Length: 190
Image (tube, rainbow, N blue to C red):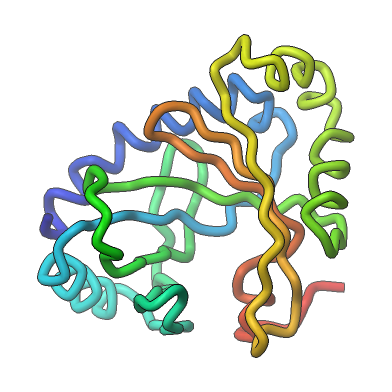
């Protein structure tokens, strides 16, 4: 996959992720977009995309996580994804699993100071739009999978527990802090 192919898929991804966010009620919650992530299955494609994204911004993180490099690129000019302006792209290098190449998920910040996955889930469930839909989310009626995670790298100043909503190929993640604060690239907001 090259950058032209990736960018040509962005409007469709933006539309689909907006529809999913609307279905969850998250558009009404007016949360700030943190970043978007993509997936590629070939190292040569990841190298090509990284080289191109470096021309559009700067690498703010290049950690090896679970045995593979994961890059965060802060763009000089935000990209329009649906109705949101996105400043950061996450580019994980291939991990050997075969998944469709392209845009995979979008992440939002729910500023709440949660320190654990359980606390984050409790905060997400307090959102009025989510509270109203929770019974049909939890019972599977909407065919939405909910997962939590609470990992924190040793060298990161903040924990950033996450709640993920997945439906088909789309995933929306919510966490308490901007990724740039989590990696220590930017001071936490007061």
